[in-house]
Image (cartoon, rainbow, N blue to C red; front, side, top):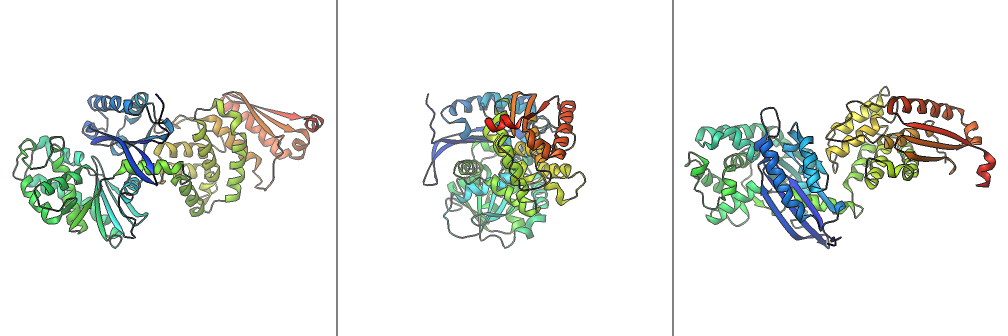
Length: 506
């Protein structure tokens, strides 16, 4: 079956439910082709040690098997699968992801809380009129709640560890409902919200809510004629609170408009929303039909339209840490020049390898902003732990690994993070490019300085004899590098000097 090159797919592996949206774009607006949702309750499968249970994993894998059939018509590079709070927290997430990726045929990208918040805002902003109004966007998920304030772009982003599944399990054990449990849940949520109230104050003129809990509350209030369609008010919340507390157990909830699939996690989600009204001090919110998956689609499409948020993030880091931009570009250019020679032997897909190598070259001196000694380690630490807009945790881990290993002895232990497999040939390219530009001079290497690769562990560097003789320090560095790569990685780097007459006749 032919794939539809105009279609894009976003799969959100949330803590409560899995959401798939397949869409195309017309004049920068989404045209929905297909939607699918499964209530998987992934967060309910986390034990006290943060391990995802076999039952929860199986529920998720069964859901993904159905979803995989819907993805066959979408080009693989136009599919993005995102894991959020529960997969960030699960100690055995890598094990689950291997199984899931084999079913989907696509990689799962674990994103940070603030990146999730950015994508929520991007989705909601594209659902609203483009007028210049500042907004507070609230998204209550299964395991986390995202708060974002801004206008056309987000200005303040936070992700708080409270959601409809996690709070229902924690404060309404076994589905028990009473005034005491409700007050404890609201109090705990307010404690989490309180440190951020002043940060957000003054950054919004209207409040927008998205995702399941808020949409469910809006639907209930609308059916009971307590609020206008698509709105939630403080008065409506008070009426709903009384309805909630008339039941002693979730099985007894008899709230008009509450769906059966939402019933078990409604008390926790409602408590979080109630606390937000109380602590943030707003009286009403509008409800958006868009959320993180629509944000993923807009972000993904932007990558194909020269609006890649990741490039902007790299530029911001270069400016923020006063990195020598010219040196970074020199190293990047040489890496890009040699990349085709090793492409067929890489672990990393070619297109991704090109981006990662360019970004790593631009950022390889990031750690100098902290200290010269061990600066490769400082840079790697920043890249592992920073909130980098547009990047998944796996992409950050790959970048961090490249920067960590661009100099000194390669670190072959403790390199795997988020299931990332080191691509040592990319490391070799970056290391060699850094050696050639160690003197930080704006020189152009002759085209006769070439690199070839006959096997994943066999590199050959060819240099004109005249150039080799004129650059004895670089030649010595290359000899040392060959020894180091052989001893540390088992990669052979053969250095061949070419007779100048042979070069001239080539």
